[in-house]
Image 1 (cartoon, rainbow, N blue to C red):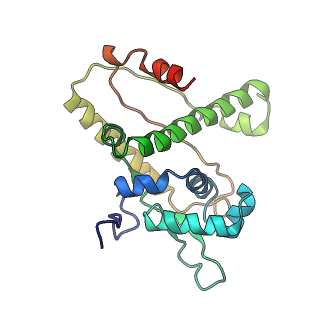
Image 2: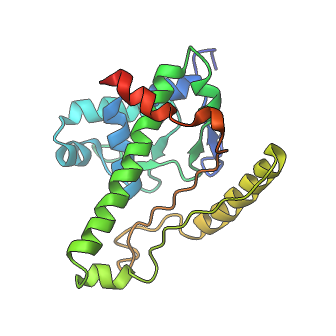
Length: 220
């Protein structure tokens, strides 16, 4: 391994901590879209993904190899030896320190691009769901999920140490549940849908009030 190589755990089921190299590798918009397709729809080839996204298979193949290099995806076991590789999301997933990358001038731009897309994606998906519920409450899919879908917010006074302990416990809980569903596909479990669970733990500080509005004004 050279200094330019990302630090990828040898066990694909171990969660990868995104370093600066991997962060920059994730900043390309097409790579984010490819990851999203693999996350939502399961393993696929460059040709399949190119067709879904309206991109050439050459472009998707290149960016898939880059995602593999940085540890975000790997080859689907049992689907080797064909004309094309089948790619899947890394089973162990990955996590990144947004605070660390945003506060570092060398990684700030890439972090803003990656985190901005993730936050926008979360908002759009939740808005899509709530709009569907509003416009089509009797749709079978909506009726099926109406009791399970949930949106909640909690506040508590904590020290940074208590918040870190709480976050670790919450992540362990989510991880233990997530392992129960690893490897499922629409073919193996046709009665399932992909469910998105979002968590965000952050302090509400007087110093932060209005900052997001200032950024929006600067962009205008």
